[in-house]
Length: 151
Image (cartoon, rainbow, N blue to C red; front, top):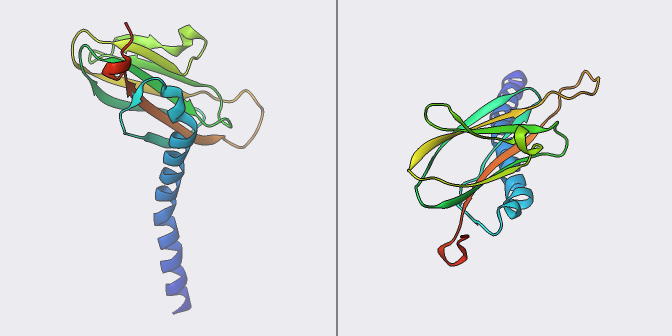
């Protein structure tokens, strides 16, 4: 009976760990990254997850014509540098932060509405260590409010 109760407790803990990590990353995005969108208005969606060095992830998001946008990629300070590219539907590179000294944001305006791919890769650490570094990485999108619109 003790083994059954122990097994149920361990299973319950394992099921809640991904939710806890996700909640921590969402909190990281709100507290650390959201201010980097200013003066753009956050779209209200917190895309954040735990990534380890060497991992790549993609986010697909629709953007509309005529709107000024800012995309911010924000990684935990414990992570190696985070590279990102913005690709169109044909996977043509529209922006690559390697060309801007690994900047963490890109401001843009599209002439036609389209789905873009935000491709993020956490680099491998140059430090000699057996431990693989991991931490939160957030993708936030902001739009320019009509009253504050950039020209």
